[in-house]
Image (tube, rainbow, N blue to C red; front, side, top):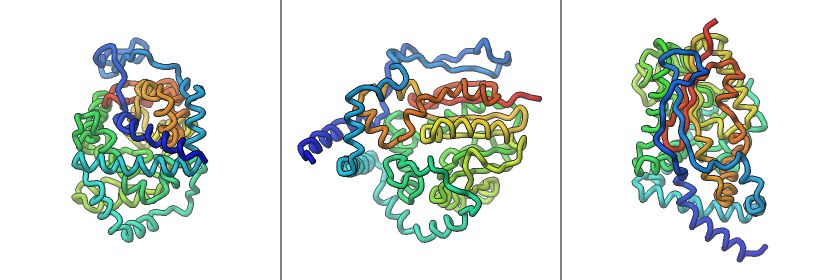
Length: 368
């Protein structure tokens, strides 16, 4: 093994980590514009927000470059991967602490309560659920992906750290981003939804905000495959006021096969799940959302802005690093949310920006 090569790579990591964690914003030709889309059903509430970027690379071209292929090969060598992400992780924790995010103290408290969390996780395990093969991917460079305590415990921390730079390093930037997602969603949701489902709820970061925007909600169901994340989600629920916690019901199930009654939900949400999934899974989730929604019900999706991501990943080094943390990146870039939602039967009612790097899609199941 050439350790000089490892040293050079680690030096590049140190130089590039800030650019990577900032989730860089490409140059835009103007402000986000809101306009009615001519080929949509003609109602005043159905709008599209379009963002024009300059020099958007052709989809997936960065994965075809020799530089990316060489770096991807090197980063998959275990010793290089482990050293590189050990350095990266240490740097990230230091960065978080300097921003005022008490990463160390938070994780110490979480590990102190891991016994209780394990009990909750065991109670939430559904014997009828088999974890599908795709779910074992090493998401976010955790060896066991979403199926480990580190992933579940650190989810809220990563959310704050990665989104804060988009809001002048405000530690509530992730909340502001989700509030904008809900604002865009609320602008086109008609009536007062009573029943909602969050598909892939994780630790509840997005799900637990639904009733703040839609106080008419009487029941909110959250499904996820990771009992680790569901345990953290359930623990949060136990600390809520009874009036709020009673609305929420969470259980283990794949987002693409929830077991929820057909035509029973007014609202379905999918938040920051698609970029962690194969394209076929995301399309299956679209189909499942369509199935469980009542006619006239709405589906809302929050995820990374593909145009922004394409610009960020034009750098082969950043693309190779990103692939290590998001193994389904290439599949996400091949997703065509507007087209795929229409293929599932939806009418797309709004597209907008929840942040400079996050896009929202809202769609409606047509009335019968």
